[in-house]
Length: 391
Ligand code: HEC
Image 1 (cartoon, rainbow, N blue to C red):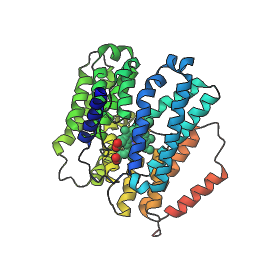
Image 2: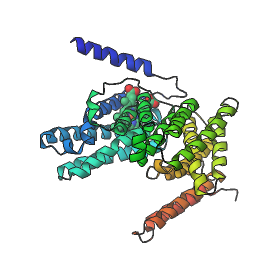
Image 3: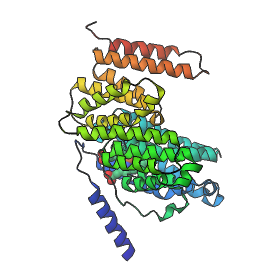
Image 4: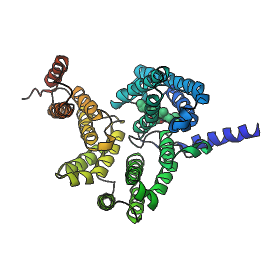
């Protein structure tokens, strides 16, 4: 009983202390938050099993795994329903529709896999679910942040990177960051698993630059990477360059540079001037920062033109930040841009980018022989919609 009171008190303080002073945070329905809490509750205890191959394949756990997966599938359907009913109040970002429906599709697929005895397949789908939580939450600075949400004693079986991912999924960004930092400063890991090491660095930056928009913090993450003795030289060279870019932003200051849209426009213009592959990699932090500004911007009230431009720029960000390229988020934003301001120059620009993206994709998927007629019809429909009346 006493323990229960302590836990409840801790939870209440954690939640109360966690609300940040948000900009333009639209009201979120109680049910949306409640459902999210339920999802997080399931994930919190289920994730250690999902992340461990042996536990997931232990017959003693089968009944529980089925039950938890079923719960997640139901909850995912519920948030899809909530979003359809009231998307303006939940979050009007056009990418939400895609992420929400992918989430429910993935959970249903995981359940199907279990029923068809494809356990490894289901595990990998479930494993991926946390990255969906992170992707959807870490678009910008909005939303609650939890500092100490639940006890994580149960996570002892997870690797540090898995732990950090789970903590970011449940919006405990400070705790996730400190784990990522412990990975970054670890010379053994840097030497033995350089890709993991770089992943930790990029994920930490995605939190510090996009979610927190904190230059100091980002700098200390980069310093740590540069100092780590066994870190791959190529990544360190990039880290040095990222640091230079961030200190330029710092010296320019954030005040007086206009709205998030104006700042993002300037940043992306600079980043697009880069032409070599190396320079493209350098612009990683620029696109992270720009996308954070834009995601915050589109949550406010804006003119159609500005909103369409923000979507256009977001599309460009998602096209460039490779490992963040989340299926077709770039295309989602280009399309949203056309619908936002049809028959304008900006819509035509978005259309051209959308078309380019489709062509690149069809060149990549060699198995497919050309587009389906219905796709071409749809493309023509978008082109007419985008076409500027003026010429
Ligand atoms: C489609 C996007 C999306 C996905 C996927 C998603 N969330 Fe959320 N989540 C949100 C939004 C939007 C909020 C509310 C943020 C705000 O208040 O502005 C939220 C809030 C939360 C909260 C805080 C609830 C509160 O009390 O305010 C938690 C915890 C949470 N999500 C956990 C999860 C977990 C765990 C997953 C993955 C298993 C997940 N979410 C997947 C969009 C998503």
